[in-house]
Length: 222
Image (cartoon, rainbow, N blue to C red; front, side, top):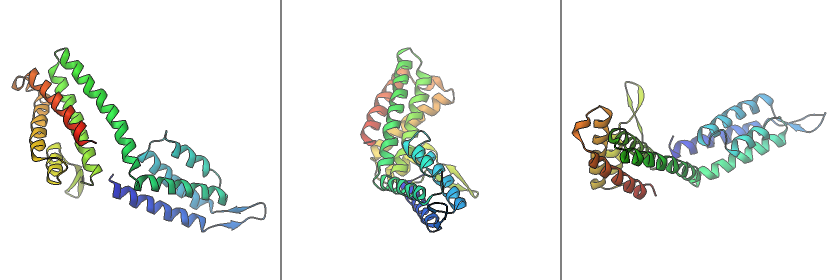
């Protein structure tokens, strides 16, 4: 999901939250309440959104879950404030910054694993692993720069292949044509490894691929 989609969805949730607050009624047994059904609907939508964007372990999830477990007006207001905080993070780009940091650590681990495989002479799984890290980073680059990572075919949305992502990124001038050619070469080597064409490349070429991909990702993912 791209930044514009996240922004649109959070606006919808804020509208839904405003609608919940508008149902406020005074209860003679103590305090102002909002419609429990409307709050339950909002609660389900927001928790689903937070889980998708941040994960269930994030503080936003537990805080919103606790804040909206009763239908007092004060609970609905607390929930509304959390939604506003999330909106500020999305519009400020903090969501992608955090996710990129986490991904960078994961990808670094995979690249280190590939280096270890190479050092042990296992060029083929190393090539596949490096290529997979490269492809996932291409998808992230597209998402971060509002380039679609899916295309519609026969009334269905399917993920673009890595070559198409590479082409789209170069066309948008996220990186140079020279980078595009290098990425094409690395993806081709990965595909050969994945399809068992082990005699069509050497260990030395995989080592150069590893060095090149590591440098490329460090440069374009900043």
